[in-house]
Length: 456
Image (tube, rainbow, N blue to C red):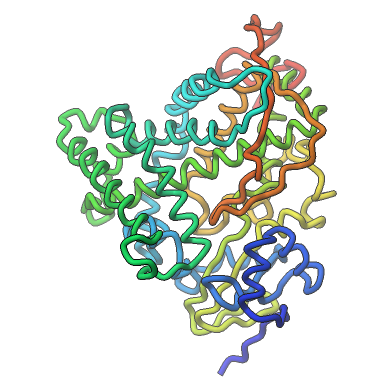
């Protein structure tokens, strides 16, 4: 028999450890790291004894291990998103499904969505109050929800209004249930699971109509929305996705595709208001047609304020050697994104908000990991990155964001995501329209912060 080798961890009762993690989150991870080092075992709610890793070589080894040996956990978001969701699928089924879902969110396809994102940002920001503090996160939620709805379905209509009203409720209940493992039968037909089931049934009804209508569209081949692509997609054996599989994947895209992006944008505003020098430089760069600092700022925001602070896998092999540790079948392994981003060996002065660390520097695949890593890295990462870039560009172009000396907003754990506790409060003033700056980039022409053309 293989000898199991695991690191030390706290010996307090499991429920106490779980409460500390749920209540403290970032503080708890940092305290455990200070006491036990880059690896420790902790009792996690839902998962039980879990190996937590933040040593870069061990994290890379986990992410690059074949999914036949270590794969997704059993208690994942698939229980809310459906058996056809990427979150629920494992092994070869996951690989085949991911192959079908990749094209709409990569490469040239992204350019199709840029004007759509700008249009939604301009429309929502037109409602912002001038000179009065307000919470930006709800506004960002509306932008990103409208964007993903239009990207997925291609047009607006009665069903869109119904989904706009339904999806935030579904996400809120699902997030709460993901954080607190309430038994399905508890409270019967009046409990949270019953409420979630009702929301899901309503979603299936609405989206079922949209799928049926699209499948009968004689011009389906001319459409460029995600639904049309999935209806026409084929597995390697020539078979098509079933309508229920499409409904599950669309729910995955609709829910995962807007909340995390909106939250990152709210965190970006929270960070920039407390770093006026960076904010001033961003405005100058934006006016000159540049983008390098803006892109670096978004990377840095996701490093210091990751919306998802951990990703979990389960050992499927009889045993698995992972760096210093020998893990048994069934062992849960968590990569702490928070502790990885805190690592001074990877990021100088890691607690500082310093976008310049990413100007002209590509973040490391296995060190900067807000989208996770390996075979289960977020499939919409490129789309989310482009969306945040466009929304921030519009904000800097059309508004003056007022700095503040208020304390940092603390992170509030909302079941899945870590959100700004005060929802990214801001004070803005609308800027007067300006003529293009001298030397500003033409469409498709990149320039740096000094207005000089950048050559590839």
